[in-house]
Length: 130
Image (cartoon, rainbow, N blue to C red):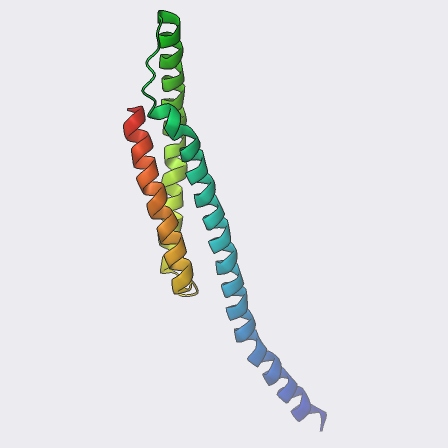
């Protein structure tokens, strides 16, 4: 009498495993989405903070000012070089997340829009610094 009840209980437990695994995957994807969204937003802010310096038309009024501006531009160029791999990594993560079956169309659209915004701003920054 006990064996059939145990088998039925085992089947019910097994029936829960797949939905639980699916839920875990969806939660992990949601976490990745929110983390990537935040990282893209942070990188956009980073670029926005540097764009005014990169596109400034102030070329200095003295040798000292010109040397200072050259040094600042050199530092900004090094910052951009250092950030390039971080930006490339974000683009890769966007592609990976959008390819996942658990990612909703809304999530894909938000991430793609942010990545596109970053791509435009990053291009503007790197052209201005070069």
